[in-house]
Amino acid sequence: MDKIDYKKTEKHLYLPKKPAIVEVPEMVFFAVDGRGDPNTAPDYREAMELLYGLSFTVKMSKMGGEEPAGYFEYVVPPLEGLWWTEEPGFDGRGDVDKSRFIWTSMIRQPDFVTEEVFAWARERLAKKKPELDVSKARFLRWEEGLCAHVLHVGPYDTEPETIKGLDAFLTEQGYETDFSGVRRHHEIYLGDPRRTAPEKLRTVIRHPVRPSGGGG
Image 1 (cartoon, one colour):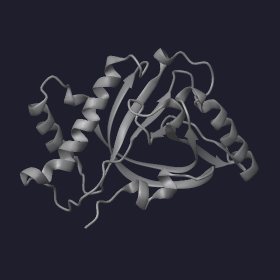
Image 2 (image 1 turned 120 degrees about the vertical axis):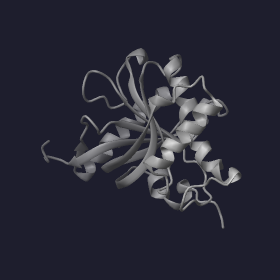
Image 3 (image 1 turned 135 degrees about the horizontal axis):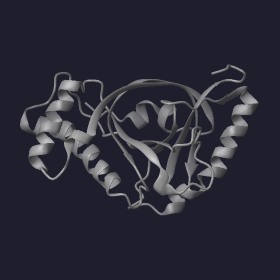
């Protein structure tokens, strides 16, 4: 059986060819919350270690004969991030001091991953890497709902121009952004900045939306 790769089986969620309105269903994630500039904050580096460590603990569980019920072969989904600041309504634009960022970093998990599987993976990772504070990771079941997204190609710092185009699309389609306490500026990272030239990075930018005039 071929490995399930959500980027291929759910292209409408991960590889938009143009700006689009999409209904994002409930998904399962491992998540870590933090603050600070992702380029320099130790918490962000630790979050990456936790998320990938936990994700690959589950993925490789079959090697030790400990795979969860319902396990199937899959490709670990891409890293994602929700970003905001103390001031409400952050949309990925504006001259923001990155040290003021608040974020949730997360990696989607297959549906067979439950809270019990998460607890097992966290225990395993704690034994393998005792220097990591596994208590910072959490299990998240989240339905994002109605959103608009677009594929940004290029450095992260040039995202505002792409977001400007997304906003124009929303206006044309009769929608407006709907940021709130749980609906944030959302990025899905299809490229690895450590191995990809900045101009070739691919990032899905996703914003929560509602029909214009829908209130809040």
